[in-house]
Image (tube, rainbow, N blue to C red):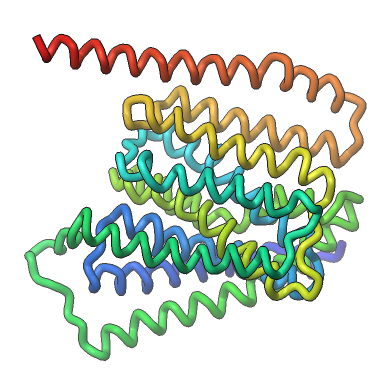
Length: 365
């Protein structure tokens, strides 16, 4: 791998992050003008803006028939978003979870994750499947905005209480930021994909593994920055909504459009079908009990998520390098770590329900 290719790879990541930043700034400003809540901004504008790198990379890869990266990027990003980003954000400060997320958006995230697994059981995500997913993205976006405006009303006005001016100059400025961000994303995704292909050949690993790790983490950097900064500033609705919305967008829009632009759809490797996709579904399912208990993600739950991402990455590295330790590692995870985690989550959920019911019984006396 030449120094030029390495520089292009790094420059691609930089452009992706900077492009997403411009895109989110412009889109968020326009969203404020129409008056939607912080949670809806997190679930739609911010989530879709920070997921634009995944969209750009996966669509570019699928169009060039590099479908392993297209699929691995989206699936890996969903795993990264929950385990790494929520884990890291909760380590900084416990994250309050909106009841709307628990009641509506997390079940949708779980539902679309299961739907994707069902659609690819035949070993391919075809164009009809892509059309179904992409249509779902449009329907979810419209429905979220309509419901959000009904339930939450308008967001708070900035200091001074004056509404934003909606002149042509301001609208043009925000549209300019959006177009600049999109242009940087397209160029950055091209450089990133080219560098990732070279990396895959140099290290002798599959494109899917590269997509699941390096590309997925790289294109998720906007989500990392957004959720961490949001949690530090106390904007916890945006921090959590960004992750949940991004995961829904990655499945419905990213993979949906990628399947549409690929001439033969997206083939799904057996290893992805048997391991990566079930892990993605399992991670989505784990959000429900974690979010439900107390309406927040505690620090110990953040540690749990973060630790699982490290374990997932370690497995991919052992698998890619055909390590002799893979069998023992897989056995330890299957026999000890996963069951203990499930038992812990069940006990935590039952304890929360018991405490809540006991408190209600006391109040009723």
